[in-house]
Length: 123
Image (cartoon, rainbow, N blue to C red; front, side):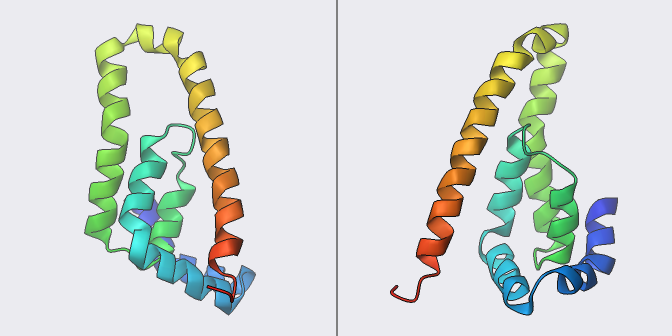
């Protein structure tokens, strides 16, 4: 929650400082349309569950409550699995993280290919 509020307070200024206005507008449009689902899936995957998303969500247009719910639901399965399996989860972690890393890499490749096609003037 703190990183969300830090992003809400200073994130927008930093976005404009380092990113063009066009890309900031695209970012805000994306967060309005997909922000809750994006936070949920980013937090659901332990490979992509970083605090940077909290700061970016704060800088975006997603409401705090939608962010909080998506964030909590996204990390909930990992917390439950860690508590349930305890020490066993550490033994299972390397292969599972490898699979999640591969899935994340494939998703990023798909995204990189899809975004330019989606933003082309022909559509």
